[in-house]
Image 1 (tube, rainbow, N blue to C red):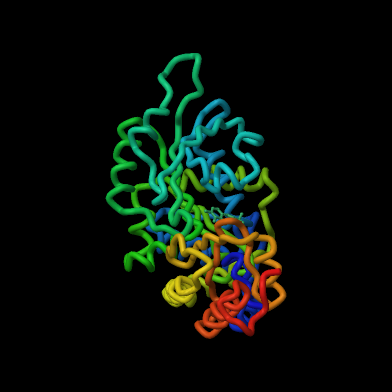
Image 2 (cartoon, protein in one colour):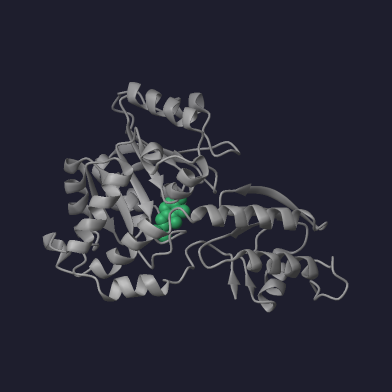
Length: 341
Ligand SMILES: *Cc1c(COP(=O)(O)O)cnc(C)c1O
């Protein structure tokens, strides 16, 4: 099976399993796990922050950040299609009484900053207090332009807002921009990053911030049930991923480009975008039928009117060529191939 549904589907490599098996461990609720401590030290260093906290998932890392930045009745500005708003089950509102103010973003993943900051509420008892701006980088695979981020940060500071970055795929943005991860993370009060996407760890995310902020976040993590014990087993996978799987994200980006070029030659579809490790394809056929036809050829995608193909650690250039051949055959470009019924 060539699985292009997401970059979360990777399996731990043998080297990663070996690192996990031999990890030194302790009780991380007592901050005693040397491997977790090393992972947190390394992440803080790579991202240019004082401290880091290992979390079970990106959702938990973002939620701990929102709960630490905002009080009940505070508001955060967030993209209408941002993960922290749309795909985290409303956790900040449900568990924190934090009011989201979703804002439409433009096709390139940026906000119109006048529109965005126009949502800031006056200091008046009628309104929730606007406290925080969250950005996402990459957004649908698109790295945010650095000048835009700097502008948004400056205006947020002027307005007295705090800043959180959902950097689930920050590593892809760093590789695409050929800059250090700390450059992408600079200017934010907190940043979350995933280890379990393109980096290929089986689980885990990190939240970075000031020491005081991370101390606060650890209380929320405990409350959310995220205080794990000998979790150096997982941290060992994360450490290996940070050291050995970051730079190879360039291969995923090259494979995405290869896929986009291959698919662009197939008449019955339109490549709508190719951003870092994601290719977006507009289908002019029934998505469910297309998805089933690919699955019958051992290619997995989440079929939608705009279908996203995601490259990752477990997909090779040969796999990409095979996928292009399968899609071509399925859509009837190849007279001998299987057809969409
Ligand atoms: C995947 C993802 C997360 C976190 O997801 P988990 O599945 O909870 O680890 C957060 N933000 C973005 C943009 C993501 O893509």
